[in-house]
Image 1 (tube, rainbow, N blue to C red):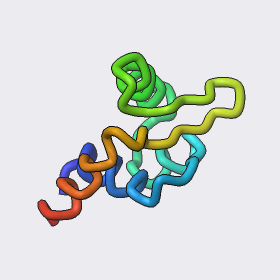
Image 2: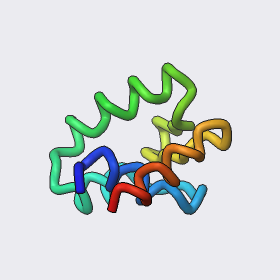
Image 3: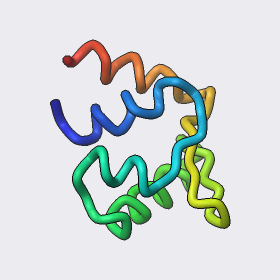
Length: 72
């Protein structure tokens, strides 16, 4: 499974997740994850709380998690 699929699968529960948790599960540096998260947040795909270091999949884009689950 690709890292992006895993990323959206982790967010599929529609709950907030810490960047450190997601980076650890993906096996990537947190700084790399922040760049991806910032892009997705600008596009309104993710809700990113930079102060708390948490992310959540936007409800309008929740179908991405279902697509990731089908590719498994």
